[in-house]
Amino acid sequence: RVLQLTRCHPFLVQLLCGEIIVLKNEQAPAIRRLATLADVEAAIPEALQSGGFFFADIHNNQVDANGRDILRYIAAQGEGAIVSKLSLSQQFNDVWQRTIELLLQRELIEEVAEGYCFQVELIRRWFTQ
Image (cartoon, rainbow, N blue to C red; front, side, top):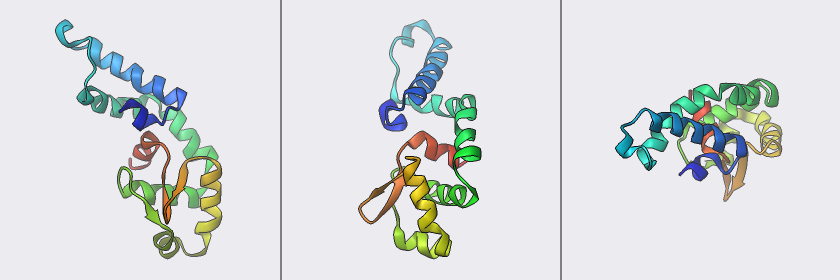
């Protein structure tokens, strides 16, 4: 699940695993050695908070207002959701194609089937906040 959430991004893997370790260290010694899916999910909010500078850099320095709007729109559709080109064109009129190209170049989203989705689930979750 860690690899699904981070898409193997080195910083995000370290961030999430670090938060899992903090969580596990607070648990009873008998259950400390094995991280469960529930532990991974429980560590996500802390990872989003403690890694805020990483996500804020994307938000503030890597995309413009149109990019943020599109990322929030795609993020709001849920984990693994694919947003169609038609939906984007209806929601964002004529600015969406240029903006999508930038988001693809930044590897924040990827083109799949007839639409787009987030590449990294943790980044998607940050944009839903």
